[in-house]
Length: 371
Ligand code: DAH
Image (cartoon, rainbow, N blue to C red; front, side, top):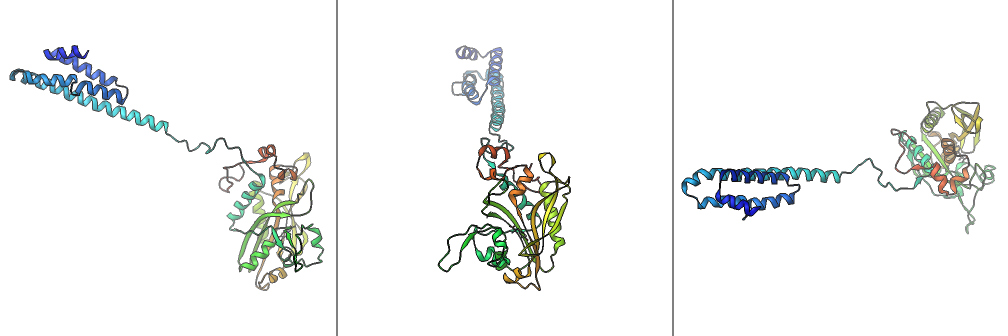
């Protein structure tokens, strides 16, 4: 084809030139990618390209011929050059578009779609409870699982020989040379002691953590979880405590109202003391909150005993406050309807698949706690 075209160029007849231009423009329009377009450019405008050949014929013409054909052939070269540039731009856009499409990242996809792990209900309820208390302005405090007898009992107004010690079914460690024995803390309350010894009021903390007691049945395991709260300042009272606990239950159970009952009770480290029940309905094999005629105990609380404040280095004439402690596992059982506490700690993947939570759903008050 090129040879034929060349013959035609040499003759430089007008219809041959326009045929050459039409062919050139068609070839450019047909180029499907940048490589095909570059091949077309070489064939048309390269050293031996057909348009270049046509330009070369100008040198062999008489001045009159050149005057007549020069503008025509040069115009053809300009149009073909422009068509090449336009096509190149269009192909570039298409290629860029395709590349952008191929490289698009869907940020709404799960990061690791193959992820199998689940968040344990206790971790979930802990995250939910912390989100609620953090929103109220509480700081999180922690303490060790292995405690001194002094922090776990004596400084909480439970001296040696106090009957409350028996109720705690304590795991003791081996006695040291001086006769003192460490223990696995039986509640999170020793962190009240640690915090009061370490800082001055105002104190507003919550203390989530593991606790241990020698006990095992459907609703008791030797290790379980508590969340403790402590507020110490100059004028906090039971009314504040009541509001905090009511707001907490409303937010945790995601209901507009939870009816609570404060029942007089006794703890050595609080005076007065109360146990808190929430109204529920236990007929029909499951626990429904906010209705019915049953009451379910969820926590112990009270005004911190002046002796505790004093033993922890503060003046009970100046400072007062309240505290509470509740079982996290209990709350998880209630909220998620898991009937047997022992299953919480068996590590059975089928159980966790059923009761667990997706790993990327962090509970927050604004986003909904346990969607
Ligand atoms: N420590 C108690 C227990 O484990 C619970 C408790 C009751 C904690 C009253 C408190 C409180 O802070 O004020 O049974």
